[in-house]
Image 1: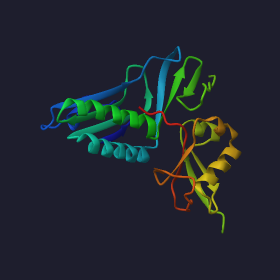
Image 2: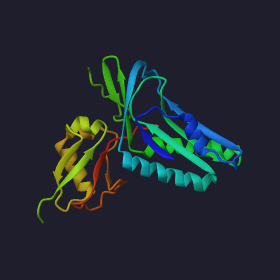
Image 3: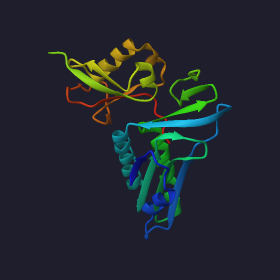
Length: 143
Length: 82
């Protein structure tokens, strides 16, 4: 399952989809919205995605992980739209025979998603907003 | 070769800079690299970004790829998913 959704993520469904009777381990990464960044209070995040390409890129990442760590099951769900602090932005779940593979695969997948997948987030602060990682220094737009 | 207008899908900070989520540009036998160069010239603020990648038909494209009339082109500023 690879899902890009504007609705709140059903974390248990992601876990259940990734689970496998042959697995001794299910590893789950849950990315949540922090209430602070750059010493400022985050009011909310806005996520957008190039959905068709994001799914294709996530699929390639999963294929690599499945090959390298012999995944028995996997599932990824990424939210888009407006998210408040505490909300779940992304869930990655994998299952493997033994636990070491599950830790490594899960980390690989979320790291690769953050590096490659065409999804963008904008932090909205009191009195400003910023597209994350867009510029070498912060490019603040004053509200 | 006649001028061909291709639709660019613009994402993230790039749509703030370029003033729209979809822009039509003339690509007369241009490569991806030539398209990037012309965007950087027309929208100088794009030069301040950490990166500006271009996707053709939903895959990252190298600079030497030739753009065709039927291609789906996307402007990919630095990604920040997850």
